[in-house]
Length: 106
Length: 367
Image (tube, rainbow over all chains, first blue to last red):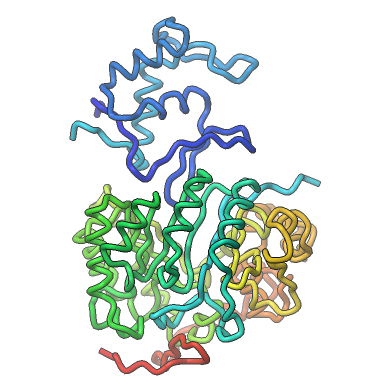
C-alpha cells in the first residue's frame, strides 16, 4: 500500500523535547522517540503529495537527491545522506500500522 | 548509581467528587478525609512545574474531572506548555458545550468509561443512569474529531458480555478500546470476592480479544491482563518514582494514585514544595525507587528491572509489608495467598459495595 498524501492523525503530535534533546511523536498513552530523519519526515506529513514530501526531504538534505543506499549517521548524529525512498515508505508504513498516519486522499 | 530519570507522565486527579459509584473506584476508601481541592492557579503552577520537570503527557482524571468548571482552562494551560493532554471521564457531564470548550482548549485525547455492554447492567454498576449519556458523549466526541478511547474495566460480572462490548466499540466507532481487568486495591479489594473472575472467563476473554484483533484491525485494543492469573507481577508504574507521578485533589504528590493505602508513608504537598524538589528528594519517592529496597527473590532476579517487584500497594494489602515481593509472582514466598484467592470453586458472587462519600452507598438499579 502506498500513501499518496500522508498526514498525521489528529491525536499524534510531534514535539521537540528540549530537556531530553529528543524529537518525539506523542499519542494517547505513548510516544516514539524519532531520529533526525524520522523527525524531518514526520514534520512533512501534513497531507502534501508523497512526491512533494520526497522533494522537500531531498532539499533539506542538501539537494543530493534520495540515494539508493541507506544513509549512515555521521558523528553529529545527523543523517549525512538522505533516507532512500524505501526507507521513507517503510517508516510511513510503520506509522500507519500504529494508527498514527492516514492518507489524506482516502 | 544511575541518575534519577525525569517523569514522563503526570496524573492530575483534580477532584474525588463523582456522580458515579463504581465498585472498583481507585479513589481512597475514606473520601471524606480529602475534601480540600487545589484552586485553578495552583493547578496551573503544578502544570508549569511538571513541564519544566520533563513531563510529556498529562492525564486529567478524578473522580469526575468535569465537575470542575475550570477544566478547559487547565487543558488550555497544559497545551500552552506543549504538554500532551488526556481527559478520563465518566461522561455524564460531557455535553456538547463542554466538549466544544475542551476541543477549543486543545484537548488531545479523550477516554470515556463504560461499565458494561447493556444499558441496565452499566447503570447498575455505575450506581446511576449513565449509559445513554456515555453513548451520546462518544457521538459528540467523534463529531468534534476527538480520538476516543472506550475504557471498560473487566471483572466477573461483565466478562461474559465481552463479545457485546467488542461489538459496541465497533458500532460506536471509537479509536481505541481499553479492556483492563480490575486491579485489586481500594474499593476493588473490598469487592474482590464479587469481582474476581474465574480462570475460564479469563482464558475465554484472551481468545475473544485475539479473535477481535484479527477481525477488526482498525480498532486498537489494549488488553490489560488480570495479574492474579499471571506468572509474574505487572510492571507497576514501570517502577516507583521512575516515569509517573500523581497529584491528588488536595495537592498531595503520590508515586501512584493508590499509594495512600500504604500506611506510614508521608506525602509532600505541592502547596509547600515544588514538583521538582518532591520528585528528586522526597523520601516517599526514594522509598521504592530503583532496586536497592528489594528483598529476595526480587533482588537477584533477572526480571528485577522488567517488573520492578510488582505493585507496592498490592504487596501491602496481601502481606502487610509494602516492601515484599508482589505475591502475584510465582516466586514470591507469599504466593499461596493469591493461589488461594483464585482457587475454585468459589461461592457465588456476594453483594457489591458501591463507592459512596462516607462509606458504601445504596444502589437500587439492580437489573
